[in-house]
Amino acid sequence: MSRRVQHHPHTGESSRRSLLKTTGGLAAALAVGSASAAPTADAAPASFTHPGMLHNWGDINRAKVRVAAGTDPWLSGWNKLTANSHAQSTWTPNPQATIVRGGTGENYGILYNDIAAAYQNALRWNVAGTSAHGDCAVRILNAWASTLTTVTGNADRFLAAGIYGWQLANAAELVRDHADFDLAAFQKMMVSVFYSLNNQFLTGHNDACITNYWANWDLCNMASIMAIGILTDDAAKYDQAVSYFKSGAGNGSIGHAVPYLYTDSAGYALGQWQESGRDQAHSVMGMGQMGALCEMAWNQGDDLYSYDNRRFMKAAQYVAKYNLGQDVPYTTYTWGSGQNCAQQFQTAISTASRGQVRPVWAMLHYHYNRRLYLDDQYIAQMCFSVAPEGGGGDYGSASGGYDQLGFGTLMYAK
Image (tube, rainbow, N blue to C red; front, side):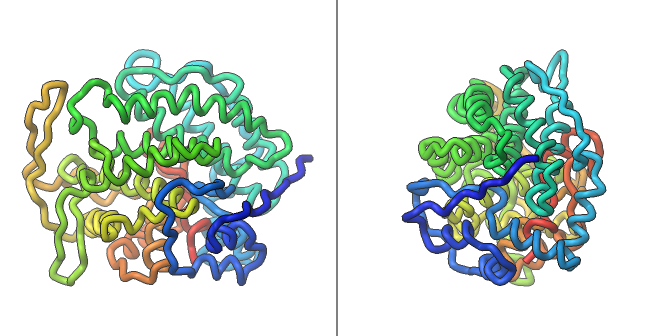
């Protein structure tokens, strides 16, 4: 039986960050959820808040109290979690020394299934306090920390390093105080196996033209660097991700990810997403990848959600509106591809995968509408049309169903 030890608030933090750390009851948790004051830090905090990635203590306490009271939508979100096969404490990890994504010998499905199980069991431990689930999450993470040495494959290895990097770090953040978790070994594995590839991609882009790779490639690697920075209390890594979001040369930086702005006939600001001419599955995926980055930054005191006059919100409104079946404006998108920057064009928005369901909208709706009290009409419609959100295992067996950790209804409803 493990014993949980909560972190004590760091000294010198902002009042909002301290409140997130110390909320212990419903009133305090709800006060955090409704706070409209945005964090203002321009660089990594002097000391990091833990847990401080996708979930803070306010989120966890709110879910704990609401689920115990049997209140919806939290209870529906909880029931979605507990019904998932990955969320069972009997899950047996299958760690590999080498993970391959792209090319011969692909086995990365093993990793994303184990990540989903670790995260979901960690959620159950945090919300319900059941030691068997905390122990299971720790078994999974310790097994990978002591086994995994290499992520490889073709160019897709950078997607694996990015997506599974930030997801693994988030699972670990939820059990970092578990008595049996080998945090040091896990941190070492994250830096040597994942950060090395994340940094390699953001600085070199696989030797391709800077615009060759879609926004999600940058975004998942940015999110992994940020998450590893938080997990290891490394301000330089955290700042690297924030700086790239604001001014990076690739398509994951906010200005490149949202190249064109509009206002629709109803008066809503919209932003064309960089992958909109490609397909809607990757456009919705982008909402989850950039959303994760923004939520992690928010929980460390940086408001990327509102950066550049809330440019990300405009993109989310655009993607949501189109995937609700409504029309949106579109400007021909031109970019350089390959190693020689050969020009490519997309002259119309893509209908491919239009309306695909992914658990990315609750995080965005409950931020913009319930933290900031903004009218997010299209995001809200998408949020409630797919609620309650599930997670890995609820959206098919292919990798796209595991590109986001999910369960936003449970963890973000306010």
